[in-house]
Length: 163
Image (cartoon, rainbow, N blue to C red; front, side, top):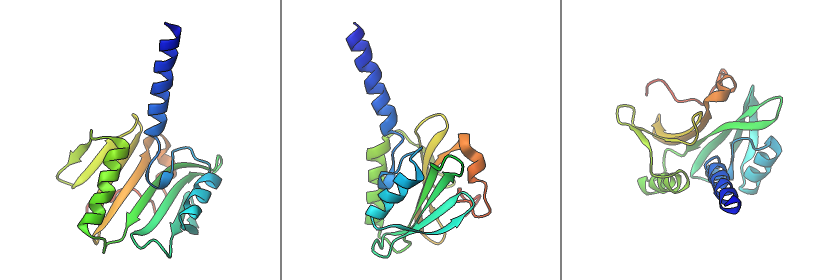
């Protein structure tokens, strides 16, 4: 009985951890050093830092315009991130990203047809939202509402009110 209970708890823990990881192998709570190394291994390098935001760009990955990490300054951990894809990507390329998101985070989504947004709920405070920002960039935002204060910068990557 104890072994089956422990097994179930371990499986639930692993499932919970996998839901916290996302695009580019980034995870909520990653250290900034780990996230930076992970992105560098994929040829993305930090070019700008503004308040709690660290902005990464690649000269080799033409599908992605930028990746922005939202970092907790004292702990130097990742609180969220935004991936902005190139506006010139084909629908097939964008659909590949959306398929990957479904594969990673499941088919249970909230569709906001009015704002044309798809949201996956990872935990009660953590979500992933995909939408098209202007001009026509597929944008994916990993957000933790528990750390909302870190997202409130002058150039926050949060979802636009209306586009």
